[in-house]
Every structure is written in C-alpha cells, then in structure tokens.
Length: 300
Length: 265
Ligand SMILES: Nc1ncnc2c1ncn2[C@@H]1O[C@H](COP(=O)(O)OP(=O)(O)OP(=O)(O)O)[C@@H](O)[C@H]1O
Ligand SMILES: [Mg+2]
Image (tube, rainbow over all chains, first blue to last red; front, side, top):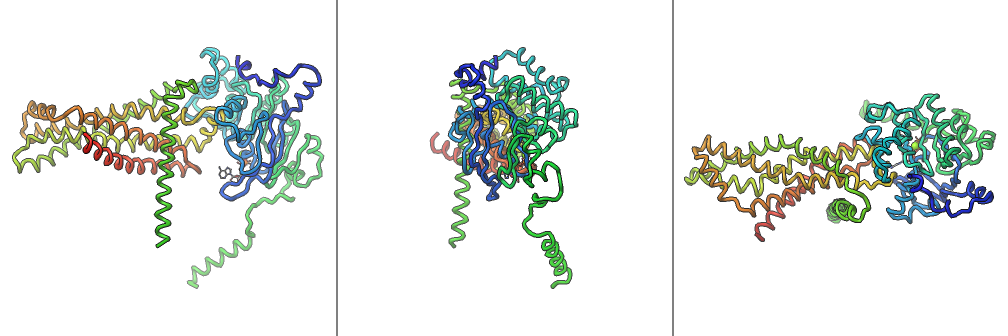
C-alpha cells in the first residue's frame, strides 16, 4: 500500500526494456553543484560537486568536522546553500516550497548521526510516527510494520522502551528502523556504524546491501569506518578542506596514489592532513602564555 | 551621542525583530490550528493537545490556588486597613471581588504559569532542537509549528481561562475568610456584597486577559525554545529568556488592555 503511494512518477513512465533499465541505473537522483557554505564567516564547504545515481551506494568519507553532515543537510533541504545548487529528482531544492519539499522528503529516509529519536515517545511510536502521519494505514497494519522494521535491526523487544533507556548503538538502530519505515527510495546514513560493535556493524552493512539488491534503494552513507565503506560502496567520494579531493570505485580508491586519500584510508598520523587546525603555531602560543604569566607574577 | 543613538536604534530594531518572530509563530500556529486541518494539509494532534492541557492545568492548579488564596487574604487585610478609618469595612468584599476578577486573577495566574509552563515548554523545545529532533521532524516532512507549537498554544488558549477562573474564585475565597474571621463581617453579607458588585463585564475582561496572557506565554516559550543555538547552555538561556520576556510582555499587555477596557467599556 505504501509502495503505491511512494512510487515515483518517472519510473512508471519509462518503458521496461533493457536499454532503459540500463539508463535507469545511471540516472542521477541527486546532483550537487558548486555547493558553498559558511557558518558565521567560517567557510566549511568551498565548492562541492557530486552526483548520486539511482540504485547505487555512495560513500562520503572525510575527517571529523570536514562538513560531511553539512553536505547531507543540504541534500535533505534543511540547510540552504550560500552558493551553488542541490537538485533532487531533477528539482532544485531551493526553489521548492514547503509542499514540494515535503513530497520529496517523503521519498527519503534519514538516519541522523545522533539517532535524533523523539525522546518523548517510545521506540515503537518513533518508528510508527512516519506511518501514522503520512499514510492512511490502519493501526493494526502499522503495528505489524513497526514490528517488522524493528526486527530488521534486531530490536523487536525494545518496542515499549523509551529512547533514554537505550544505549547509543541501539538508538542508532532504532533511528535506522524509523528511516526505512516509509520504504523510501533514498536513504541517507550519517555514520551508521560509528559506536557499534563489529557484529552489529556487519549486520548494518548487510542491511544496506540488502536494501540495494532487494529493493533498489539508493543509499548515501557518511562514514569514516573504512572496512565498512569498502564493503558497501559502489562509489566513494572523499572530502577534504571543503572540496571533493577524490572520487571513484572502491577499487580505484583503494589503489590511489593521491596522498590525502592514502593517509586517510591507511590511518597514518603523518601526511598532508594536519591533526591540528589552529592557525597560530603551538610554540608561539605557549611562549605567549608563559610571558603573560611571568608579567603577572612579577608585576611587570 | 551618535553611539548612544546607534545602541538605542539597534535595541529598538532588535525588539521589532523579536515581536516579528513572535507574530510569525502566532499566525503560523493559528493557521495550522484552523486552516490547516480544514484544507486537509495536516491534522490537529488531539492526543498531544490533551496531554499538554493536563500538563498546563492539573499540575499547576495547586500552586495557582495557593498563591491566589494568600494574595486574597493579604489584599483583604490591606484594604481593611484603609477602609476601617473611613468606617466602611464591608466594602472589602466589593474591592476584593473586582480586583480579583479584573486584575489579580489573570495577572497572578499569568506570572505563575510563566514560571511553571513557559519555562518547561522552552526547555523542552530547546532540548529537542539541541538533540536534532526538530531537524528530524522537518526532514521527515512534519512541520514543527503544526507538530510542536499548535498543541501547546491550543492547550494554553483552552486552559488558561479555566485556570484563571478557578484562581479568581480561590482568591475571592481568601478574602472571604479574612472578612469573616478577622473583620467581623457576616458571611452572608460578604457574599451578597461580592455578588452584587461583580458584573458580567468584569468576568469578561478577566477572561480576555487570561486568553491573551496564555497565548503570550505559549508563543514566547515556543519561540525561545525553537530558536535555541548551541548546547545545554543555549537551553538554559532560552528558559530564562522565556520567563523574563513573558513577564515583561504580560505586564505591557495588561496595561494596554486595562487602559482599553477603561476607556471603551
Ligand atoms: N549549525 C552550525 N552552526 C555553526 N557551525 C556549524 C553548524 N553546523 C556545522 N558547523 C561547523 O561545520 C563544520 C562541519 O560540521 P559537520 O557536522 O558537517 O562535520 P562532519 O564532517 O559531519 O564531522 P563528524 O565526522 O565529526 O560528524 C564543523 O566545524 C562545525 O563546527
Ligand atoms: Mg557529522
């Protein structure tokens, strides 16, 4: 029933022959062009270009704080670009008004970095909420669907619990169950496996792959877990200093000579990526402190 | 000189922007309360509204009654002090009745509710902003105004007049106790005096004020909560702001409407 509601208008109009299914596979569903964004005069994104194609799993990598979540927030239309455009299903997100944006958003599922569960509702209600609000399904059917989604992430028993009673990893899994409640066409995952044990990480990776193969779901995954990235990615992009510094298939990324990417995937402490982002030199900073302290003590 | 003008100008602009923000929340809230459901854009969240009504009323009725009861007693003693010298102590009943219905009831309930409901609404919504719940709502195609503001605003608009009504009765009762126990007034005389002096218009002005203060508290609290930035510290600031700004707003509205009622009615 939900799939009927959520069926994209384009896909029904394409005649089902081989060439078109080939074309469908390469169809761009999200296109980000020249995206720039500053927060209080601090430039974070300095011209991001990337595409997400239908049915693929795109992995976005990059160091902590480089703006991965910010890119995701532009794709779902909760942040407005300073420069550049974000197109989703061929529509410029900025030009869509609330209704248009909402009908696009109903085709998305989003797993937030923090889980972002509604803390005043039980786990079951969290997963049921999109179904109650956006479909006409009866309560019994919604209950069944909630159980199914929670079973997928292995948390069926958690249904009556409140989010405050869950561990961080459990919250993330409930967040995933909520993200897929409406059987979305595109799922955004913001660090889906960070803070999870290796077994659950494996389960989540398998889920992402199952969604792709079984239901043709497009996935955009932000992660710095390289093992999991190589397991799920069809294509990978690497962000650094507000730009895309590399993109390609997992093979290409694994074998690249690009020093920034090499340092990142090998996890080496030395390389082109500095650990500290401070502009002032460490020693000058410390010496300045010592001088000031002396001046205060001896009343100079 | 020009520096001072600049500061004043900026402050004035800031206040205008703030009022604009409140107006936006109020009108968008009213739109989602009335037009939204009629145009089938999004239903009203009945259960959540009911939950908020319970939270606003049952949980605050105790402290509201306590405050109004004591203020009623205090007011009776103070009035008796003046009226005794004029030899018309029995007018305490009239004065308490009028003061409670027209002024003290709505004002004091407004103050108590600001600290009680306003602060908790601001803290609650602020926390939701910080924990990304509000972004999650938006991204899930759920309008935060419809989802969060409307139940709280509607609950305040329904419950505030009721709580004020109860508070006013309790306040009058406080005066009654003092009148009968300490001022040697006959309880029947006190009651008839109160009932004779109060006209429908007095109750009406009190309830209009209640409605306005209730909406004001809800709108300021929602606005402060939803515009939180930063972490826990931002939530604390929003909570304080919600209380202090609501109190100032209530006092200003009180003056404006009292003056209006005085000249019109
Ligand atoms: N709303 C905001 N206001 C101000 N600064 C922000 C805001 N959102 C993000 N930033 C800043 O933008 C930068 C990128 O943030 P973002 O959350 O996108 O990083 P990230 O790549 O997802 O990092 P992580 O891997 O740690 O999640 C950070 O330096 C952050 O301080
Ligand atoms: Mg992030």
